Picture 1 (cartoon, rainbow, N blue to C red):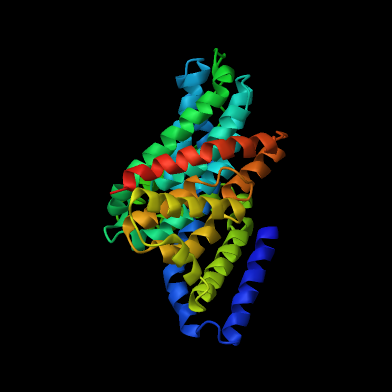
Picture 2: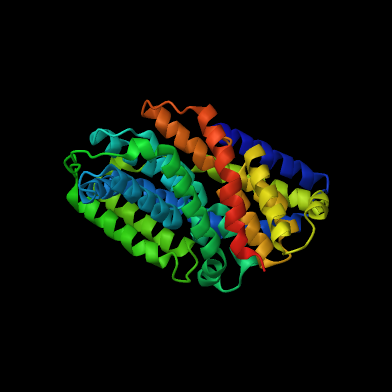
Length: 383
């Protein structure tokens, strides 16, 4: 609700700017043309992920991983790491934070294991693994057309190495932090019961088909929307009470729309020219570190989406600079709770499960990890 209020305030600011002539009305059409496919994807993939979770897809996958680990705690944790990377890459970081976090916490508890090492893996990797594909993060979808004209393949060719480094460094730091709590073995719990097997089967198939289509070169909103429609129809048939308007992330839509409009106002009025002057135009390693550092600082001070929108004009001079900005705003939000929406959603889910998050330790470890993750992930981009 608070997110929606902030979004409404941002929209109001943009409307006032339009009325006083600070931004031309034609700019609104330009912004709408750029962002409607992005917002359509966000809505569709959120609906798909939510319905798949209600059908038990994530629960069953996590339970199978616990069985595959054969009672070895470290192996189960590594499986959770892999699951978090895949969920983030294909279904977005918010899906990992909102839907995967309670699943891995439940699996840890069911097998008598401490939940925090598994929960922290999901929230950190929700951010750092969001560099993998255009659909992994809203910022990627915004940047992809300016980053490359070769679609998903072009995006991956530029971002694969930084993403791999960011993920690897994240996993190493998490392992160093929790290595003593990940030792030993456990007795695997029984697999979770599937309440409606036909519903589960359809949901699993739909998600399995949608994921490769998201990287097939087709605009991501198309397969995501198709998958959402199929699942909605099946749920209307099998579980109609599940279908509610709350499936749509209204707060996020209002917030994102307001940010896009306010960013357009700032760019039209020349307010972002100062930022461009600060960041220069080089693509050497130190210049790229500067761009990524500005993105990470901006994300942790405000939020990753406004940080990206504010810095995008200054980073658009070369693909490497825009890629460095993505590293900063995607992999950098590990310090403050509000740095990314995924972290706030993750915290809400843990609180609902009765797990207290020690924010002091969260901030301290984030401040320790962020420089290593961001600076090392930028190195492959330097010429």
